[in-house]
Image 1: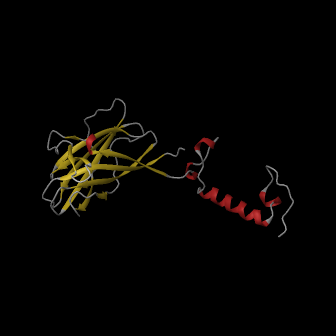
Image 2 (image 1 turned 135 degrees about the vertical axis):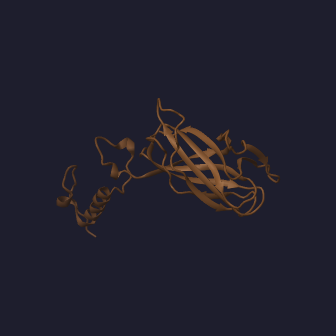
Image 3 (image 1 turned 90 degrees about the vertical axis):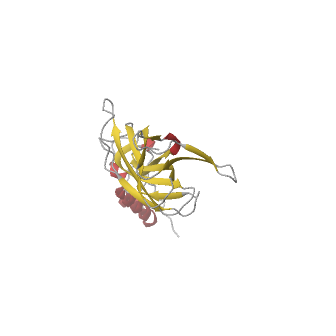
Length: 217
């Protein structure tokens, strides 16, 4: 194989001075850059870059049952602790009958882009069989906004109890926070049990909220 001894200088046009074996790589890089498929470290960026060329980032936040507050009206049971017998695993849960509610309050991460949120419910039950329907809705609040406002449209997810005291995980449809959601705002989330055939309490372990975030290192 014969390699070119041509010296490539910064600023030289690629099509004029690169041999074929290097030209191919050059063309692939140009194509990938145009398609936005090359990740770029945010710290290395200067000037203006088309946001469509930055990689999409999905982040999440977990709402543990221990941080939930049952509503005064039709609230679920307050956070309960249960030690599982064999390995002394401590289970903290919010125990729900049908038609019961709890709320969570927290600040959305600064990078939150304000779009839809996908919930993933983690739950179990101590006994029984049947289905559980979980529901969720929320609102985003900024400085000087009234706390007592309507929440956004709810979404639900239906899951079936497999085995008592096993982890059960079910994703719901994406939902939108009411208001003008943005990073750093206070989020009010209401989680409830809207139905199902399980005759005993469903134990909510927590809810993971997945959302799109602005790119950062």
